[in-house]
Length: 259
Image 1 (cartoon, rainbow, N blue to C red):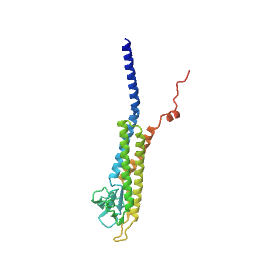
Image 2: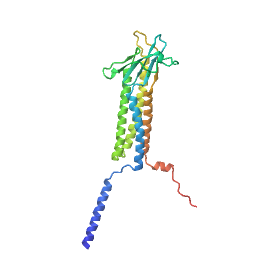
Image 3: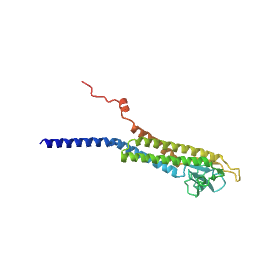
Image 4: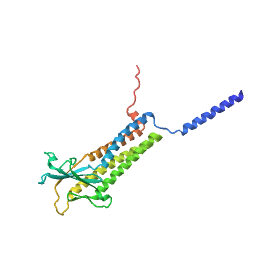
């Protein structure tokens, strides 16, 4: 009887020690409430990532329009983005009657699209007797690609948080998303300066350069939207990493009043 009690106590002691070791080795993961919040912000991240990829991958950042009053039945318009430009010849009868310039570029017409050569041979592009400033165009494209790369790293961090429970990566992902939004904004601003430089760099060689107007198009709008959404995502993930006690001190819970 004494030996059986001793063996049972020894077995209980071993089980308790093993349970304590297991608790010490178990990593604290996300609570169901925190995991739900992370997934909700991740849906917002998907919206920002879609807008960013759509903006960088399309060429409707800016439209260059000549004036319709050229004594011809056709007029020229162009649109360009980070990677290529397209010159389009439109019939003036298709252009809206109240519009003084040729466009919009989405109208049906004969299009001639070429990729920028300053990524390969380093040559400037020429459009409407004007020359691009390749340094600014190249910088805008590189910064945009860097923003997409940082965005992919942020998504990888959040996936690791949900799959492995690495809660510390939430803050890393927040920094990545915020940085990605800032890089896209910087790329957008550099591109705007490159458009202004293109308008001013008129070639002195004949024929004379036509008068141009320009307007920003929907791809640039997608870039602005992606930047704002990603900045919001970064702020949301940072808020999720804050401890709960500051908010509890700002909004203390009131207990039941004594009657």
